[in-house]
Length: 130
Image (cartoon, rainbow, N blue to C red; front, side):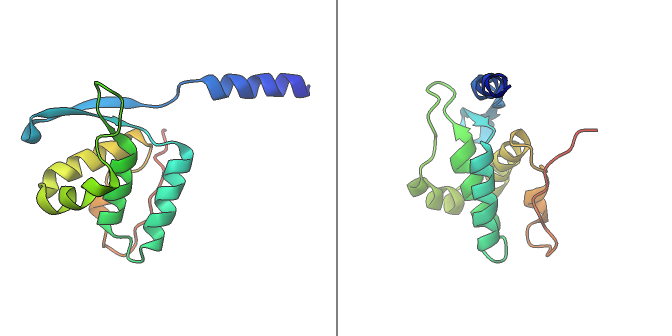
């Protein structure tokens, strides 16, 4: 029976369960990929976000954009930690928000979590399918 469990675990490990979408960012003249976070990336993001105290939007944006946004041609991450400062300071909040929303969506998190930042009662909640 242990052998059967191990084989099932192997099958689960080999399954490709990541969600990937390509979105057209007209304002930047590019297409970018967004992919779901792994369970570890998501839990690490939630922990860092909670540690930020007031659950800041910038902490949320930084983590999801780093983990989720990739170049659809190469599969490589688009942004590094060094890019985050200019991204958040120089680029349109509306555009960055659109990308963040898509990242949350493909990662199984409530897509309107970003809209709730600062309202005092926010917790990232997993989406449930009915």
